[in-house]
Length: 441
Ligand code: GDP
Ligand code: IMO
Ligand code: MG
Image (cartoon, rainbow, N blue to C red; front, side, top):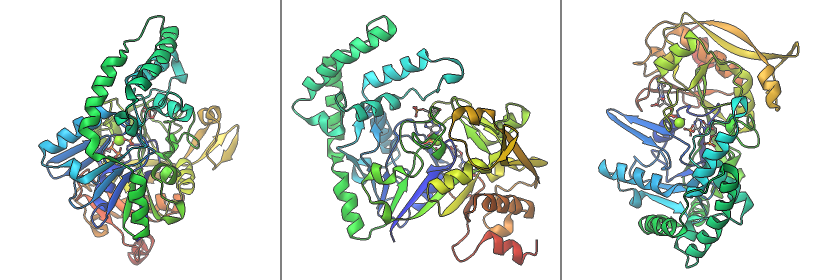
């Protein structure tokens, strides 16, 4: 069975971690291919809650190898903390995970730069990053001369490299801030060499591992981070992250050829959220938004920031599903809408007096669109206990059917709560459409 992938269709936090954990059974490899510690993926199994930033969500299952591939940017102290957290819960990460020697390292100057660039841009132009050094690290990767990769940490010229980079970064940061940054090359070398020593048994050439797995027709699951609308090339630029988070980054990030991917599951919430700056046409900065935030516990997994909440947006989801080559949908957080009498779904935008159904590529256009809504009746029944389509109220199924029709891809999973068990699977030989037809509704 060739490669499968889980990607977010919105602005992140769609519950990708939950889906990946669920789909890990029967896989040989689970692969993270972009992003870094800006991600926060949650897996809930009974009373156990795992919050993962770096480590693939396949780590909880035994017998699966987890890879962090070249397209990821790694913050060594963060990943070590996660390894420790998992060790305390009986998971030996070193036995289940490999890290690419090609993956770039988020160095202390990247975190300082992230903070400074955020401070220098205010108001509606502020991206509101996670301040994890992600953008500056990817910028240095593309710039090449001042980059550090995981493999470099254990090279004999590491100290020399750090000294050279610190000299330049000190000049840049001093000029930008007016005071010298706290960057001590010797201390950084000592600190990062210690991290490297701990991580060394895991650092390897993951390209060989995935390409061998492809040759052997092994089952690989790719875990996307962030959401498609945060894609550096195809998202709501400049209010995006610095990697290809749309699913188009799977190949470049992991080293697996694109024609080997057969199944791409696009995850979407039953509403929309966004953290940080940038346009959000269906945002509900009002009681409805607060209701969704309260019921969905919409606070960032990584930064704890309250997430901006709004109605589900078909224009955006159809765009990202097409962009990512999505083959089926996982609809999550259905339970969060259960108390609402009526639910709005954005089916088109109005831009300069014209109805449009394409997603604008220019951020100012996106700021100016007015959502056109269709009202869907709510079901006002608790669905958290539902384990099959039969357990779901018809109105909630009609809502789900509306979403799948608007996206143009079949729903394969419906999630009604955070727990692994709170998931309904619609097998390939069945469909929501046929189910509703058989029910004559
Ligand atoms: P990810 O970044 O896409 O992995 O998503 P996050 O973990 O950042 O955010 C999703 C949050 O919603 C987590 O707290 C999950 O435990 C929780 N969650 C996942 N699925 C559901 C669901 O169907 N209903 C509710 N109420 N919460 C869910
Ligand atoms: P997961 O994988 C939600 C957002 C930040 C900010 C923008 C740029 O958990 O879905 P960055 O630090 O990447 O330079 O910030 O992207 N962002 C996320 N929002 N979920 C995420 O990851 C995110 N990763 C980054 O809030 O608006
Ligand atoms: Mg998240």
